[in-house]
Image 1 (cartoon, chains in turn red, cyan):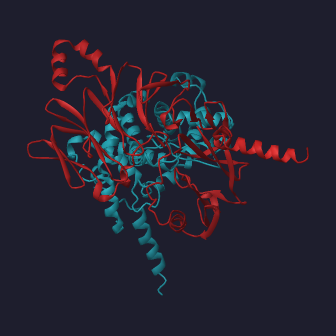
Image 2 (tube, rainbow over the protein chains, first blue to last red; image 1 turned 90 degrees about the vertical axis):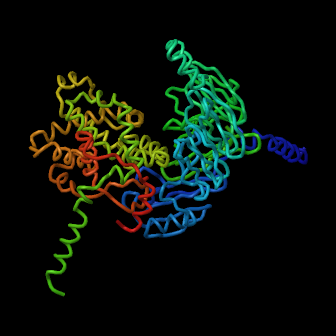
Image 3 (tube, rainbow over the protein chains, first blue to last red; image 1 turned 60 degrees about the horizontal axis):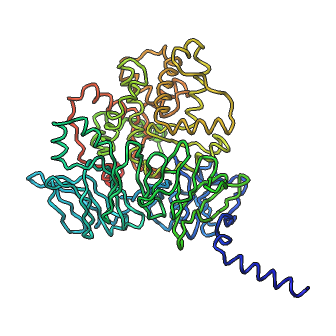
Amino acid sequence: MKKVTPILTLFLFAALASLPAFAQGPQPVRRLIYSLEAGEALLQPESAIFISATKENVILVLSKGKGGKNPPFFVVKNGNKKGPFNKLVEVMQAGFDGEDVSTGIYRDCADYTPDQSRIPPDAIPSAEADESGSQTVVFKGKTFGPYLSVLSLLATPDGSRAYFTASEKDKLWIICSDGRRVPIAGSPRDLRLSPDGKNAAVACAGSLSPSQEEKLAAEDPEKLNAEMNKAYVYTIDGKKFGPYGMDFKDFWFSDGNNNLFFLDGNQLYMNGIPTLTLKIEPFSLCDFYPSADGKKYAYFNVESLVFSDGKKYPFPLNIITFEEGEQTMIKWIALENKKDIVVYQRAI
Amino acid sequence: MPRFVWPLAGVLFLLCVLSPLSADEDYAVLFGAKYAEAEKFLEQNSWISASLRLPPQETRIALAVVFPEIIRFKALEDKIQVRALKVLYVQYGRKYADYSVGHFQMKPTFAEQIERDYNRLFSAEEKTAAEIAPFETGDSSRMRKERVVRLDDLHWQAQYLRLLMMVMDKLYGNLSFANDLEKLRFYATAYTTGYAQGEKTIRRMMLTRHFHVQLFFPKTRYSYADIALFYFNRQTTPATRAPCFARDINDFSRQSERGV
């Protein structure tokens, strides 16, 4: 028996460890990365706090001066503490390898917005008007158009692609600089891009062309009104979803998740398929992190990070998500015991 | 070194720091697209004016008071990281975190002060007439959470602006101002530096330049009150200046590296 027990234990452990749920499922991996010393605080300049996380590491900028804003400053990066620094600019350079962070590090929202300030200078797209009043889109030396008008124009932050919506001879299009071009209709809202930059979507009110709208406005304004209350979603891959009614709320791509989500009333759709009925009030896209299959989620609510399986974790100071295998991973930094900076990670 | 050198240097320094950037500065050009977006925001949300329930000229003053903050919000809205600060404020209170949030860039400490002063300065009859119930007193995590939720709501920001105008009237209603512009300069400075600082401090701060639209390391600072006045003047006499949005604030930031 003495020999059997350790072997059994080892076998059991090996079997459990091979299960994804055991590795990073509902039980998060917890790691203490730093304990604030007496008098130390996370640096808090105006409306920001310097905790930066990526999939690989966590960067903390600390102040040991008055009010958590003054020198001496320290940086904790990959578990190593450096400092003291007397100037904010010096500690920021030490923490972020000289990267210009003067305009902010990232946007702390769950819905993805392509940061247009990070596009390489030679890949900043522009919409230019010619003498006839037509517009063209210029992107990396290539000209697209002319169009009657360019409605929305965005580039991926890495500068690899530009997407725009444009009208042309009574037709509307969603167009990508890589050659994809899909007809849309109605009145388009702003464009949304996926985090990997490969997909784009636009929601439109109604499904009429400009001339059809004009005609119906003159003939039957009530019918036009009813038509314009319908919502459709188009993707650059040629998919069309809808019509949805007046309860259609929003459409978006989530940070770290390349699926297209939209919300019609309380019904969440992923890539056009209903996946979840949400009961979150008030609901904010900025605080909603869906899983890779759209059937689970995590939600930030000022006091804690709440998962759809009912688990709740307090004091989330920073949240990032990324895809790993088939799962959406969520990593968050928490403050515990008023001094311990702890990193958690689990699949949503 | 002659004895007068240091006092003279001090006077010159104060003149540089305290003097307005320029009374004729065209802030619509200076802040470019962000100024236009801020103006458009107020046009598209005309309910804000109505919800203030103030006489027309007082409404114009109130909107001008917060206008520079709308420019700042428009410049930074995708960059502001307040999630962690909200958590720290709710859990541990104002000593651990204070932050600016929303279109009017209001701070939880500002809301706390306004709520206290509204409770303290207004009679039960006045509160009934204002149709705003007294605020719960105390400093619990639950109450801070409710305040954070209020500050995230534009309707509540408008309500806090209304309360600011009412409280300012109670505290400084006996002051005489030469004209509406002077009153606006006083109110705008009070909003940005803290209205509870007292008349002397507010008047001293009226000519200083602290406003900027960078998140960190501002290269150029402006007089908050000058921008409020510029907006107010354009609203009351719109024909005097042709709108010109030729430059974007980012272009200006690059130019200002010269140390303007």
